[in-house]
Length: 428
Image (cartoon, rainbow, N blue to C red; front, side, top):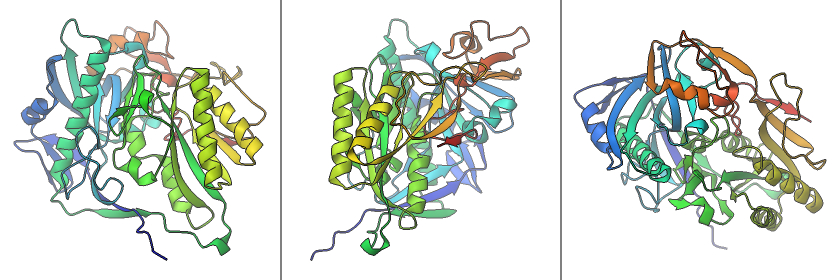
């Protein structure tokens, strides 16, 4: 019998301890030096009236607002490609070598759908909730030309961020990696009798700038599909989302999906990881039902014993979660849901817009509605006044001294639907 070669991906991690501006873009002794003028030219777009790049390091008194996306710089050193379907081709995605600038992020900003962006503080209490506060961030500040549509603005910012991340990753191509992590899914011997599990990644595709891109294609035009988890690490999914900060899964989140990491770590130990189902989440009931049907068809075809499901967004995507739980229960497939809650200021309100008795296994990432006061920062990158209109906040959030009274909902990834958060707990 012919033996099929399994996909194997080496993530070659280069740790970034600091980022500074310099005469050339390079890595030197774990410091990323950035040629500011070159990077600005990389980010430039005909839809921008001005472009600037700033640095934001852990512990600095800096507030970034409004944040659109965060991207981890990665590149295929053998081809120079990354972000297949956007900047690169599809050859070798999910296998071979990928160089990663670990501890570094490209943060894009812009008043696109301002009430549905977020903020990052590099110090203070926000840093206890936001993973990006611990990273060395290269921040894009680009103002749009007059007369463009929000859709044109979003696309320009999204593509500029992708180009910036790719440009920065090139600096690590010839540097020796600090650590190499290999990801492959070898067959599990049947005699081990481990539970067979799939990860279901619900990807928002709702229009009105609530979208993502798989291999460069708008998710509204993409069908439910089975993917190898390595594809996600290799830039297959790019965020185009302008949803509430706590609701959106950033491009960084897709590149570093913790559910994929955890299931990989347990593959062959106490479970058999069968792969990832990526399924678009729309607003139409018929399309939700079609997506759920496809998810369960794949799960049954692969003889899965269970599925772990994460959502993106909030509100109507919870209908998708409950539909999946109900159909999985009928098919004899165990289901675990990962989500955050909107339980009111005191945590006593109904936390979800839709529930079902079939949802027996739930992992919560925290209550979006909890209030927090963030002190003033010495430097603001972006537009501080945007805080008064951020979704999940309050209209008088900005105080005279520059401090802000907000809900966790406005902090990037504070209550991440994927579990990239420090405040998660399990409910059985």
